Amino acid sequence: MNDFTRRSMIVSGAALVTGALLSPAEAATGSIAIKIISAGFIFGASGGSGVLNFNGQQYPLRIGGISAGATIGASGTDLVGTAYHMHSPADIEGIYSAVGAGLSVAGGRSAARLSNARGVVLSLRGRQIGFMFSLDLSGMQISLA
Image 1 (spheres, rainbow, N blue to C red):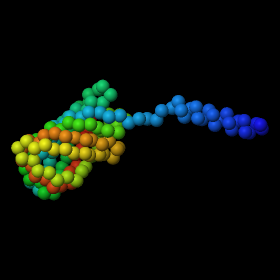
Image 2 (tube, rainbow, N blue to C red; image 1 turned 30 degrees about the vertical axis):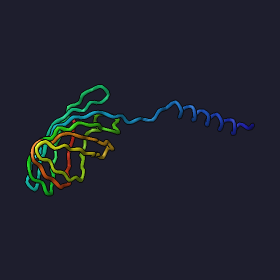
Image 3 (cartoon, rainbow, N blue to C red; image 1 turned 180 degrees about the vertical axis):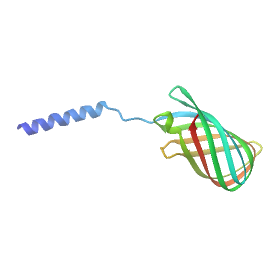
Image 4 (cartoon, rainbow, N blue to C red; image 1 turned 135 degrees about the vertical axis):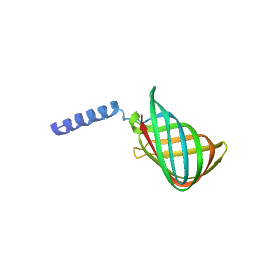
């Protein structure tokens, strides 16, 4: 065997062993609980707070957002769920948007699946109290408090 082939095999073997020992950065999940108060007539506004549980730590959250479209009413929503594809708590920050249609009268159930630009996906479910009819494109911003 010539020296070039032997060196190539050694380098290839070292690369395979190194690749096998390194693990890719795996995304983790966290749990989230948020409370949102919304009100509007044509244009709406919402705000709230919440908590992210990630890797055994709790992180307070601030929620804000506006909506434009057919929005009428006022409501409060308590949501719980899971945040997927997170690498650090800061990944939760960003603007989440979804196209949705819903009607809640005196205690309706709600569910949503939202994502942000960092790839975090929120799967939320909860209860909406009050009266709110909406058919809109909403933007919800979450930031660490």
